Length: 226
Image 1 (spheres, one colour):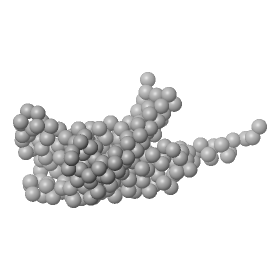
Image 2 (spheres, rainbow, N blue to C red):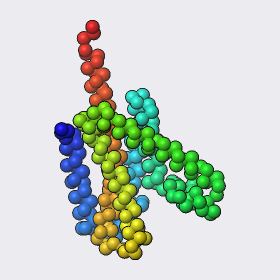
Image 3 (tube, rainbow, N blue to C red):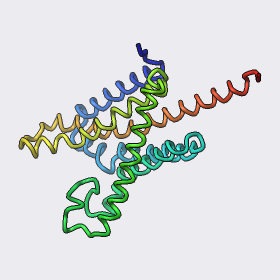
Image 4 (cartoon, one colour):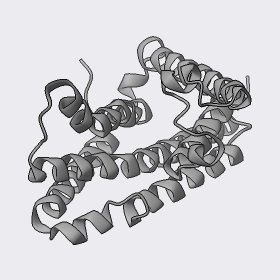
């Protein structure tokens, strides 16, 4: 039986408090204040960019520890920061992860080629990291460690944030139903809030990883030689 470690219990409690905070903002703030707070150029969006860039920098500093995994994660961190900053709109006429980007005659061929290369590279990095995480959690008994349990949180929250990002528009496109304003604000608060929480959780996981490596190295040095 897998028991939750102290680290993940604390992280879980902090996350629940954070979600309660987001709920309060969504239900308690005037519409204009809420819109400014969670706008594309609002503080939550800006802080998401800062945290992703910070994570990428910390990962580059940790590159000697596990070069391939750390480098892949650093690349993804900077890509997510660029995505949050809408850099894709500066170089392409539409989002490059959409199929119509590659099929539309309005998109220049050179943009399709560059976008395709970036999309394939990012996809490969994500698949590699997902496989590495699966092996660590399942085959290396990582689920019993503080690091492994903490990594589960952002791994679950990442797809959840993407679902929240699209759910309102998909409901309208498929069923023609516009969600009530209160529900829309809750979804927006959770989506933007969770996107900001993701890099923060990864930063904590990276710090745990570095602490564990330091402790292991210290134990190896203090162990009596045979």
